[in-house]
Image (cartoon, helix red, strand yellow):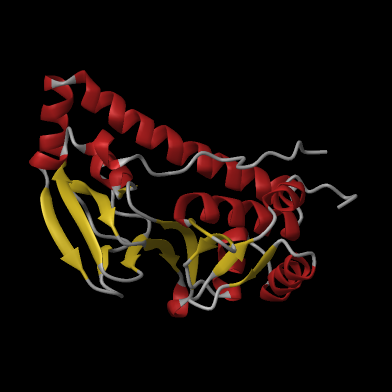
Length: 230
């Protein structure tokens, strides 16, 4: 049995004060809802730092179907794989609302890493965090029930996007059951069943402003541990 922990995966984002070393060397850009920072198949010469707003990374399939890889918020590094290996982007990154981002060319990043080892450490930390999240998703797919996967995703969403309120931790993300199913690799029906269970148990509740409110993080941690006695 998994050990229930408050948040089993590290956040993918780093705090802005850590990025202050690089911001003066980037190009600020603003995008609106539905605009793409980059597209699957495009060749890149740089990557993005997300300062404000939220995005989703998706893999597009035949007929317009999409597999959501991740939903990311401020502090995330985006598109770095294609920037550094010279291959086309394997995903598309789409703004979920107004976005402020900084674009850094590979040449600038390499120059800054050579000039300041703190920049190299910063980028390595960002890459390591994303690698851990990816490994956690693979582990979930291999060993977790759909309920456990949904619980672990909710933990991470509340951790990265949650805001404390008098009712609990509020996550404003408007994400559909079908989108959650795409992220966790389950059916929409199974995801709906899991979310309804969480509501009945008083773990989460709907937020009048959109998204959810986390009422009981300890029970969510038990569900994320995939404890069959829960």
